[in-house]
Structure formats: structure tokens, C-alpha cells
Length: 350
Ligand code: ADE
Ligand code: ZN
Image (cartoon, rainbow, N blue to C red; front, side):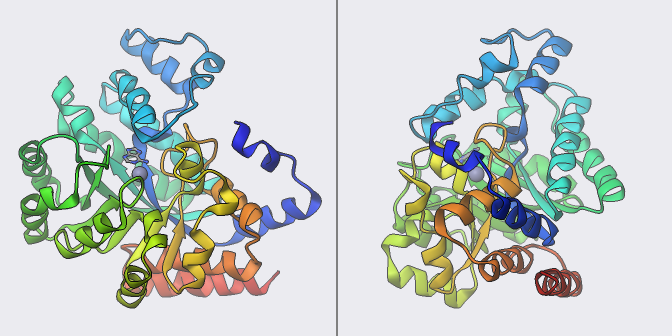
């Protein structure tokens, strides 16, 4: 797409930097599994399940991926999800993502899914979770990528519906580690979901939420105060509030930033103006992630590469971002320590 075309003609140095990033052990912490639906698989699943699509070739589908804002993207994103029907569909989607992200050097992933995009269409909750976790378990064996699963609520749907999803999720507490909040942000402040988050916390689930993607910094503060989140998805708007930055830095609350998503959804007009580097320099636990890679022109590695190029990140910055992804993950401390040691070795070898 136009905004990243200059990032597609790699020099020898770019190739070396990409190799360095690939060799760094990393975690992906902000990834919607529905956002990994590549046009080729979209067409295959539509054929398998007898679903009509508005496009008939991968090129035709891809040509529609130009978005003026988050809502414009969400309209297209939700419209094609009818192709995901069976346990096998969710498995195949997840397996394809794991192959891609393992090749990028990911060692751990925290995958989100949106049950409200599927359950009301008649897809059993157990089939969604069953298909995704079957692929995650296989991926752990095949690629050595560990995982956690996060269930997101759609913030533009009523909180009562989120509560119903939470009740469906509680029997799957063994595989669902946390809850998140996504979809259209502006006009849907986090506080509306206070009760759902409280019930989830009581059940031992970890809390994260999208905040400050298109919404104001006040939504980030509200996610901290009311939802008691331990990570903020995106958090771009923190750049406008130095006191909030200090709070996030002191509390060690990570921002799971997604540079190519922010570019494609016009959250940032130009990657050179993305706040990632300024927030990293301000001491925040900034991480790099892909959000919906099938739609935004890049998986995990491409997000690191694009941010590096646009913001002039040093090798030390890149190693710090990889470290942050491990520190901010839901892994146990002993596993974090092992992976952090591996990052130090990988960074020192260059
Ligand atoms: N759902 C999938 N991608 C999203 C994004 N970038 N923001 C909010 N909700 C989403
Ligand atoms: Zn997201």
C-alpha cells in the first residue's frame, strides 16, 4: 500500500537489520486471530462453507484493503467472518498464523479472539476455543511457540452481551488466560464494562483493553482506574499526556503498539511521526505487534522492520523492544528469565 511502499525496497543494511530482528526471541502480545484471515484462506473457507463473498480472487479481495479509519476497517473485517464456521476453520486459521509468526522469530504469542463475532451466528463457543487451542498446542510442539489465549469483548455491543460471553468462557478457564476489549472505541469508554471486568478478575482472568487507539488519553486512564488492566492495547494517545506516561512507566503497564495498523487506519499520518520511539525513550514498556496482519500489510517482523526504518531505531532499541515483549507477557517469571537471557545472547552476537 502507498504508505509503506518505500519500505519495500530493502538495502543490504535493511536485510541485515531484518536478520537481527528475526534472531531476537520475541513475543507477540496483540494479535486478533480473525485479523490473520488472508484472502487466499478467505476464498478457500468461503468455498468450503458455501458462503458468498464480494470478491472472487485474492487480488480483488486485497484491493479493498484501504481504510480511512478504524470503523471503515471493522465494517469489512466483520463482514467476511461468516466464512469461519467449523472447529476445523478456526484450527486452520490459527495454524497458518503460527507458521508465519514462528518464521519471524516469535517464541511466545498471546492470541485474542472475538466470540461475539461468531456465537450469535450459531457457531458453538466450544468449537471456536477448541479449534484455536488445538492449533496452539500443535504449534507449541512443532514450532516451539508457547501461548496464552485472550477473549475480547466488543465495546460497541451492550455490556450485558459481554457478560453472557464471560459466562460461556468460565468453563474454559484452563485455556483462557485473560479478557480484552476491542472494536469501535470513540463513544464507548472502558468504564461501561466495569462489572464484566470485575467478575472476570474474581474468576482469576487477567485484564487488558484497547485504549487510546482512536480514543483520547482519558480512556487509557479509565482502563487503568476502572478495569484495572495490566496492559493497554495500542495506547497511542498516551503521547498527549506526560503525567499519564509517568504513571504507565512507574506502574510497568505495557503498551502493545501496532505500527502498521496505526498507519493503515490513519491513526498516524506517517510512520516517522509514530510515538513508539518517544514513548520508549520516556521509559514506557513499549512493545511491537501486528494487530490484524492480513489486512495491514505485515506480520510481526514487518512491524519491527517498518518501525526501525521510519523511526531510526538502533539495534539496542530493537533488543529493548524484544525484551519488553517478554517482560509484558503472561509467562511465568522463570521462563521470562530464560528468554531474556537468550535475547542478551542474540543481541551480543551481532
Ligand atoms: N478488532 C480488530 N482489530 C481491531 C483494532 N485495531 N481496534 C479495535 N478493535 C479491533
Ligand atoms: Zn487490536
